[in-house]
Image 1: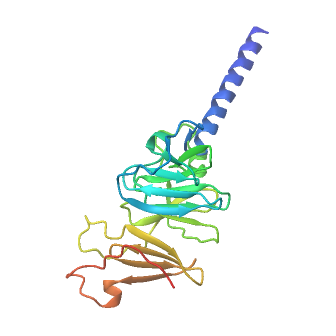
Image 2: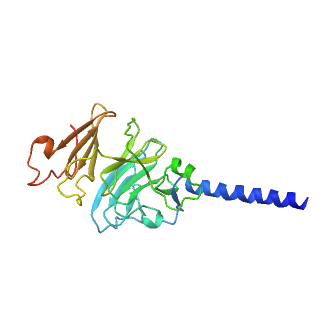
Image 3: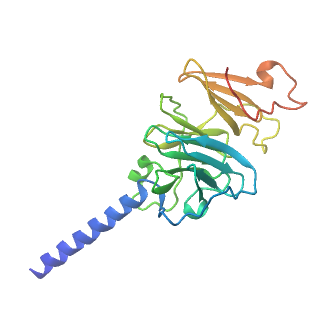
Length: 243
């Protein structure tokens, strides 16, 4: 009887421990933000450059700064979010919203999302967690299996020559097709701008050219494809739009 009780207790402890691990890791690094935990003001307090502005489906405006995180304006007050609230970085490159109303922030250190209650730093995928019960280091999955659906969100990946794609379930890193570079130490194919185009095309601007992807094929525009002398200076694209 005594051994049965011990075994039952051990099973319960193991079950509860694994339950906690699953709860804490399947959504990445999550920070619950209380109503009063974020600073608020009636004027915008940023002193650094604003790099991104976005209006969400509820009419709220989001301002991403170059050094001070994010400010959300609801028409009356500004609410601030920084790395203390779970942002991957206080430098914001772009802001988007998914079909569920979750706000997404692209930073040079990764991608974060805010659902109105929690800030999540997306650094892992559910597939990786399933293979690692006790993950020591969390990394976004890397794959060259390029896909595209109507509700995808696309983000630059800092200095890496690729993008992050969120398909509604997980975030994964996709490498751009390799290209010739003048200096292998330069991050000339880091993504600097992303724009949706017609015919299901997504356009990716980089310091050394443009990549277009329609779900199956790539269109690549570089000095080499244009016949320019790349020894002079490569293309330097900072943003891209299609009329």
